[in-house]
Length: 382
Image 1: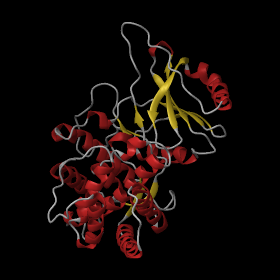
Image 2: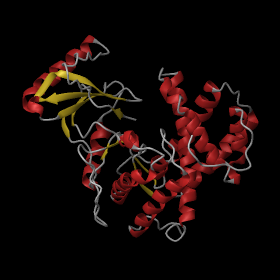
Image 3: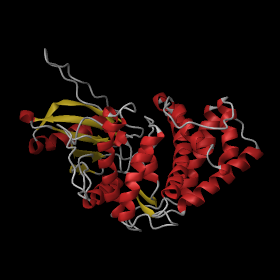
Image 4: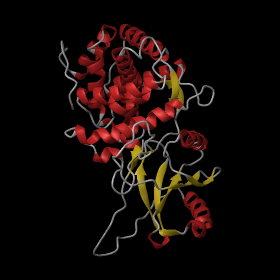
């Protein structure tokens, strides 16, 4: 999950040099050797090196200016003992072929774990959205779903790793291990364990029954970048939209078509009222069925059936992410992620209260969170 940040600017005096810390002197020396060899070809001003984004993994991103005000580039620092950049390169190629806007790879030193990338912008979509102004957000979401449909329309099996039963189950197990057990201190007895296992089996089996496509796995405003300059809001019906650049795609898989829509509309860092969620999802559904992507169990005629499937897929994701955020805080020392856990509990309860299959899960959540069991539930913002 990347959060690119705009470079600092000063109008009255030059900004103080930014010191970029390195894990070791050897890592810094390897970087300077690599980037020094590229400086002339790409007109890099090495003294402008500065942080560009934070990340939940071992990857980090740095920004470098080009000479003569010719823009900037991004450096990916991904220590090879922790990160494998090959999926990033392969998925980048797939996305470009599908017509998506992704950063061009200018240079890659696989052995050292450094990559030079096109700088596609310094402002994420998340930074310009406000739940109080859904009408302003709609053009962005139209473009986001257009990119998503182009990605899904290019899908074919056997190219990306499968989002299979084993992977979905492992992800769900993060919730009892890290959120319930380690974060909340809950001792999970045999009865609770049996309930969670049965719930997880139901979720996995139903979600895997959905049509399979290419899945980004973190398709949300934080990973969509705005182009520099005025945003092009004019659209032509049926024309592909490539205004938003897509980031953080290296974990892409082949899995349920519902996953990326659940990620987009039930965001980790902001919550929309359900009327807006429905509006965007219906627009996506209408385009997807014209492309033949909704030919499953009557989805092309019944939006409600598709929306229910998105909610169920979202529940799997929210349980997983609550566990991941707890792990990032407790194991990796990144407490900012767990601060967003209430949003995910909100999402989990929103879905669990609607479907009888998840009533036992709802009772457990209410008990753990100290909430009164709800007979009704409002989707609204948190």
